Amino acid sequence: MALLNNIQDIRDQFPALGQKVNGKDLVYFDNGATAQKPLCVTGRLNEMNSGINGNIHRAVHDLSAKCTMLYEGARETVRAFINAESTDEVIFTSGTTASVNLVANSFTASFISKGDAVIICEADHHSNIVPWQMACERAGAELRILPVDDNGCWRMDELDKILDRKVKIVSVAHISNVLGIVNPVEELVKKAHAAGAVVLLDGAQGIVHSSVDVQKLNCDFYAFSGHKIYGPTGTGILYGKRSILERMGPWMGGGDMVETVTLQKTTYAPLPLRFEAGTPNFIGAAALGDALQFVSSLDKEFVHNHEERLTDLLMNGLRNIEGLKIYGDAPEKIPLASFTIDGVHHADLAMLLDKMGVAVRSGMMCCEPLMSRFGVTGMVRVSLTVYNTEEEIDILLKSLSRAVNMLRQ
Ligand code: PLP
Image (cartoon, rainbow, N blue to C red; front, side):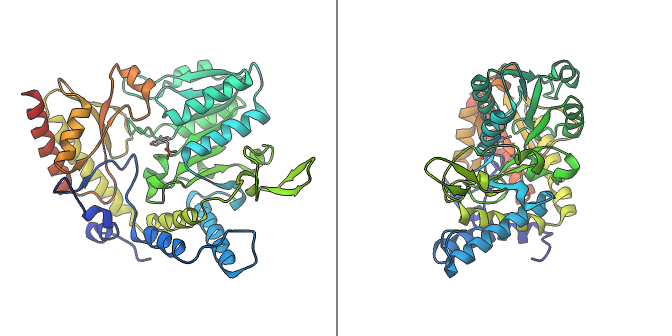
């Protein structure tokens, strides 16, 4: 794939961007929720769904072999993309939520007992809160919360107070989906390891907006979804260090995760299949490989400069709107802004923007505890990605002013 280094060539890869919504050209700023798909992804899905379709690993026929090759090829693409040591450490799941649940079940069963503790953060997505509440309840473990300050930054001083030898795992977001803050994960990993705990990073946003190198991060688990990084829905990854995965039992039982089965007892397949019970979304997984190859084909310098320019335009424009408050002030942020506007309800604003063809997210963004922390019932979120343009920021800002004026009348 040739290096993509201009906006038109990039947009040409995304047919969804050319549609009209409510009679207006679509301006899509809900990339934090899900990204549009490039032609290489939709092409792979079509190609496999309409022909190259045979269940993987099990059969000797040609279609099965082709699909197995595409599936395992995608696993290698993921491995290289995140710099995992081995494909044995790359488990296909249905998304970040499934990946976190896998760890919350399997890791807890093997390593967490009554009296132990788990740390999560109050800024986390529900996907990283609820599975750990459930796991702690089952195991009789204590759930400890890392608080954030008024800017939404981790209180590292508080981490020191709650991180002791009882803590078996710290499970937190690499990058916040509401605040866009890139959290100091390397510092956290060092502290957690020094205290004898392992670390799971929820990389749903991190995989899209940073160069993830799991060996450099030295995290023990890294979870992400395919659909946020231009891949298909229903795909995701759990990276786990081999030394830990090998000591975890499976979470789900079924076909393909076994070595031998008798009616009395089953022995399990080696990594990574031990954690992939049943027919996986092998077509989606193959297309996730294409999505990651698409990302690798983007000129990094172009992406960096382009997103920086868009973010400056967005932030400067938002700051000019009276009564608008942006949440999350930190040195390192991704191109995303969540805000409230005095006297304007977030849902009304998002609905009016939609009528103008502009798609943004509104509400709690699956982060109810964080909304409570800031004393709001919801926010509006504008999340950008590489295919957005300066003209779209201009349309958003003009539409926002119009909508605010209408709602304030
Ligand atoms: N974690 C974060 C930080 C997210 O942004 C999201 C989705 O918005 C999730 C977890 C859940 O991802 P999924 O619904 O794809 O499993």
